Length: 170
Image (cartoon, one colour):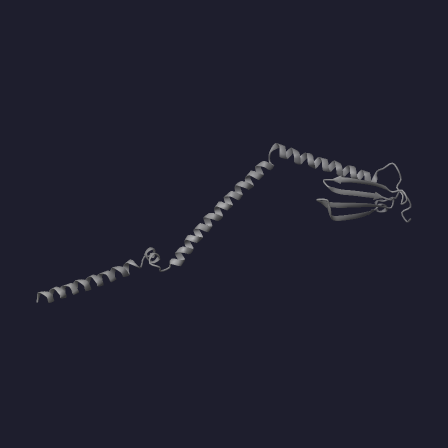
């Protein structure tokens, strides 16, 4: 009888432990941290981690770009940079005024047989003008590495400005 009692007692203890463990496991598995650790919702957990890593990387890249932009703005706002921009603007303004005077203001009278012409090389591009007394033709050639990229031709009828040096009907 002692063996039967021991066997029954061992089965009862085993059944009690089994029931208690299942009850504990059911409560234990309801928390989300445990569910992730045993495989439930694990992909959602990985996606959350991936999203956090991506967001951190984007913020770091954004911070670096912001720092570079700030450095560029600071470099553009130095006294020397402002002076160079101002000087360049004045030089181009004077150059445009001189070219305009060359087109319209000269000592000789242009004719079709004897036009007044000029040419200037400006930063690798060529500006040409020809005044034949009836029209002024302005030709702008854009060059890059020794190859002509584009050509723009503007024809200005001199008679439309209120006068010609020669007969405009000509």
